[in-house]
Structure formats: structure tokens, C-alpha cells
Length: 144
Image 1 (cartoon, rainbow, N blue to C red):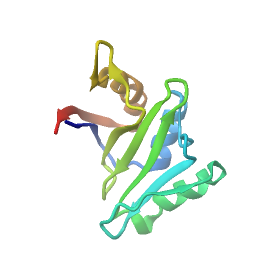
Image 2: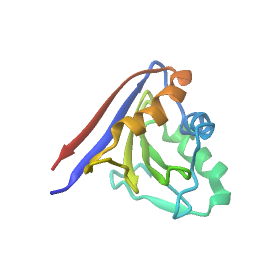
Image 3: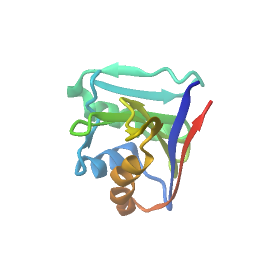
């Protein structure tokens, strides 16, 4: 049995990946994850993730935030090096909705490691994102 965990985030106004990453940087998050920097521009419905070196962060954010990509789903991986966990941050067309999916060393609950420690992720993501106009969220951890 596998698990699916994600947090859907809804903003009052459209946001950019760059704004989200900059806001989360103050809380220990960054684009630099164990594989470098990972990103996707879903302009072909294939979700073909790419990896690049950490010195290309500005280029990656410029690409995913480009006005030519506003009608496409885009994403970047974010990583919290102190907590040694992270995941995919997907921004949907229009940019007022996004999802965080804990795919990098997902934190399990103490005493129930099969379940995702959603409280940790919510506490690490929601308070800083309020400054960007976060209006609501929905967290799920489901067995497939």
C-alpha cells in the first residue's frame, strides 16, 4: 500500500514561484535540494521534471514565472535543509492555487511513521505564506 500526501494552498491573488520561494527562504526552505534544483514547466501535459545546478536558481525562477508560462502548470522542488525534508511545489495555471507534495524524505508521524506529519508541514509553510495572501488550505494524507 502506498500513500499520497499533499497540501493544497489557495491565495487571494495570483502569486509567483519566486515570491513563494523568497517568502519561505526566511523559514529555512530553499530551491537547493539533494539533487540540485528541480523544476517543471508543464506545457505538454507530460510533467517532465528537469534538474540543474544550484547556481541556476535565478534562471529557473525566471523560466517558471515567465508570462509565457502563466497558462501552464509549473513547479519547483523546495527543501528544508535543517529538517532534511522537502517536496514539489506545483503552481497551477492562473497562479492563485498551488500544491505542496512532500516527496523528498517525507516526515512521518512519531509512533505512526506510515502517516505524514502534516502538522509539521503546515506549521512550516502556512504562517509565512499568510504574508502573500494565503486564503485557505486543505491537507490530505490518503492510503492508495
